[in-house]
Amino acid sequence: MDKQKIQQFGDELYEAMVKREAVSPLTSRGEDISIEDAYHISLRMLERRQQAGARVIGKKIGVTSKAVMNMLNVHQPDFGYLTDDMVFNSGEAVPISDRLIAPRAEGEIAFILKKDLAGPGVTNADVLAA
Image (cartoon, rainbow, N blue to C red; front, side):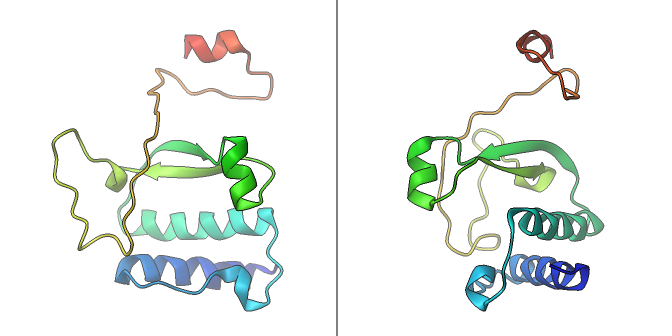
């Protein structure tokens, strides 16, 4: 996929998020979108969010169970970024009506590391020490 199309899709998803409007799936538009293309689109959307003031505070791995992979017909986990505007502290109200289109909740396990991990070659001991 060319850079212009990646930028267009990333911008469209960002605008839909800001306006809280649903858009048709990008894959339903006759576009051949590879996993690499999808990550580039995601990075463009993240770039727009950062330009608007969001700050990256972590990373996320999703679709980690075989059952969910089978349900979604994917063959590997996915990866994304966590930003400061995604965090809600215990007991804090979550402003659903002015932030989300079709809210759902999913439990997530998160770890706060003392230091970044850099690979390749990261060992189990490196992870435990981080």
